[in-house]
Image (cartoon, rainbow, N blue to C red):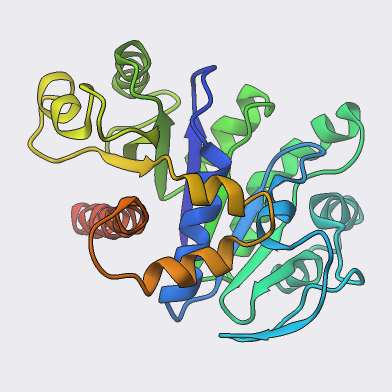
Length: 281
């Protein structure tokens, strides 16, 4: 089905991975769809840390038993890579190498654990894995890691239906991103949504000002606001619990603002997908 790729082209920290797993978690909670989150990093435990506490215990949750045992398959990409090399890969096999975060809703295909040489060899398999995953999952969200070589990035971005291009609120970074989109080689205007990561609403370079003065559009640019609770909970394996708490809040504060912006990003993705479908008719 839909492939959504999170990409950043600058050197500044945009919170790309946290933003991607936040959207995946939100979608897993609010939609009755099967979501796969695919990490393309090397030896990075960020996703595992965000979703599963260090002291792992099985517990019943909103979506049934949370399968957080140490016996869960953590092979991820390197396991699939071995299957691909043996020419035994099928779409259904992918589920054998994922880890369940929300039963029937959200599964995680963790990043590569191994040497840099092994990682470089495995990168060529990502686009094939994504194409197969589309046959099993309703939504595939890919965190495009900075360490990937240009060819691997190109293959993933060309496979994606929607690209979330993450950047900071620096005008130089936004201008450079727009330039890349205008070139149309790595990013395409038609399916790319620029999104401000670690967003500070109080900055003079807020979403409205950037949209009107820099991007020359009335449509407000997407944002993933910086949130202190998010920063803390992704270090304690409480991302799912955090979203469930936030979704139950009333009133207007930084926590509801964070959820509202994640929701707006989801809605803008769906809107852009619909527009692209209509263009193809």
